[in-house]
Image 1 (spheres, rainbow, N blue to C red):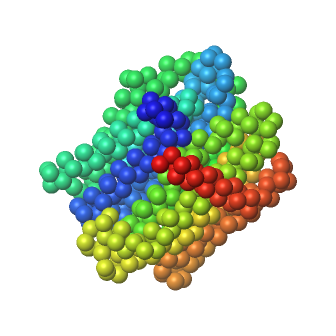
Image 2 (image 1 turned 90 degrees about the vertical axis):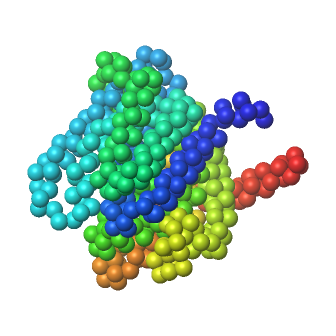
Image 3 (image 1 turned 135 degrees about the vertical axis):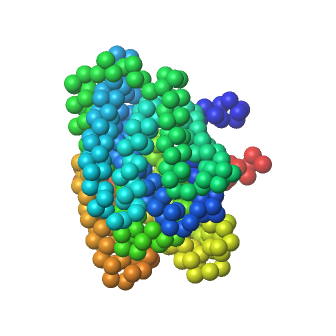
Length: 446
């Protein structure tokens, strides 16, 4: 395959986008663990995790709906959708900022350092990233994963370069880290605006009908989008308030390498929705089921090498990320064991994610929404009670696994009831066939 054609492949570009972001985020984390205090790292990751959740909610509220309605629409209709997206996301952003500003009035009553820090800096970050979020949403709808890659790389690269500058200036503390995070988002958003990637000039074409369509569909599909990030927030919140920021830093260290699982999941989820929606709109039930099964089986079996890596080299990996202070000591061992457990249970993640995407594609987003509420209640109750009673960070791993298993059961039940027969075991058979076919083709070409 020629290089030009290679980089026009949307699956490859999506994978490059998530992969490069994960590598740079990994690098940034490694630098943080070497040049900041562990408690400050815990506060920073609480902020990032919570901010990411709100960003995911804002973006997820419309990304699936926008892609679904935008694909194949007329130019007039597309302008209406882009303008209406600005109206809705602008409203969500404004509402969140008002709540945050009200919270600032009571900040002197808040004792927790992580929560105080979040309330202090949330509004600045949320406003700064709005144009960037809309540009990414538009790029995904247009299948411009090269542009999506560019936006992501610029933001994280600016953050890393700015933090290195702080180290050289001996200003590598939490407050200055918050400043450069805002700076990176502002610069990235300005570039998106200057390049014309945000469609802000289409606001005047927004319509009540388009706003209503996007809002009514998005209020349910947001559950699918945030489900991947939901447990990160509940975990961070429970650990921070029950065990403290230092334990949160250890937990975060243990989950850093989960990106080797999340990279293929996020990249293929991004390309699966348009494909499944197309098959559904054409009435091709067999293709919807078959494509979902192929995604689940192939990615699940591909995770197995990561599982073997985790079992053998987890402690060494924690030392590489966190530095010598996390190698061959109780803290490093704890982080390593967290990684081992999460990778083991990650074998269930593909089934959960792609069944959720399938439910959205077949116009059953309300099922996903109810399912997310059930998962959230289970995670909070099991995790909260378990951490409080046992004061053991490993509890949080099991508090994540049980809701995922329940979610898979509920999704399968819904798909079989409302759409078409779906057998999970067939997904793994198809995955094995796909992998063997790919290996055979590779060996034949060498």
